Image 1 (cartoon, rainbow, N blue to C red):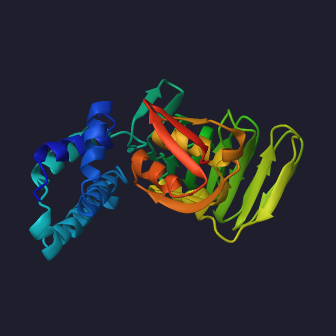
Image 2: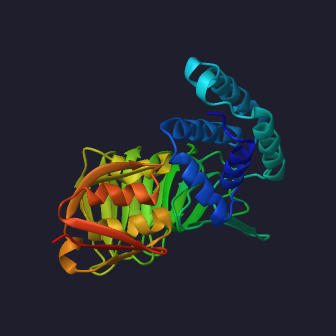
Length: 331
């Protein structure tokens, strides 16, 4: 099936944060039509991401991404089933690159960027995710409903960012300029590493999961250092830190790659993630259903597919009322 040019444009509008709810719905319907459409969407997103990874021409990866994509669409699978208008895609990609020729270079999703003489703030709306390149080449992925602020002297002075919400950081090493992340409750200092921080104001705790390197974490009450494959949870109520070893960091980090991973989590624990992930309201009809536990991976599914997943349980029944998902115990 040939991909309509209008879908190409809608997808580009989605990546650049310009798509309205109706356009998002059309893309969601198109994705639900076939596995091939989902794969093609992923390939388009790869080109888009590669196009904005660096503003520095020496690190520019667009040509490599296009070559890879051309090889894919020239394969038997894509030659017979999917043909995308690359000229249209590249035209819009070039426009975006010109518009976003800023020091921090790149972000996607339904986002809002504000800048004054001293700070830059980038916000990511519910239902979307964003990727940002900071002036020091560190990369940050913002999860739904998150906000990141950094100073205009970020590259030459102290590397300080303020986070509200959730972000995954891949920090460029610079021994002379430590990288600091400030949240409402804890501060994190690092020289170069990869880690995830979740600090939503409406949740009762702040968590940090370390993938590589080491982190110094401090609150007004105590300090600690964490190592790879460790997770620190700061309780806003008790003001105490709890450190644990984890074998698999994917549940805390793979959201940045479009996968929502959950391991033996209750629906009550999953509800905030689903609300932010799909920008919907989750309502529990009874307390018992909130305790039902699930393990799984959701990858670029629509909210309808997610509901179908939970509906497979003989203990849970889901229904939709407008922008509200009603979850109740199955009798």
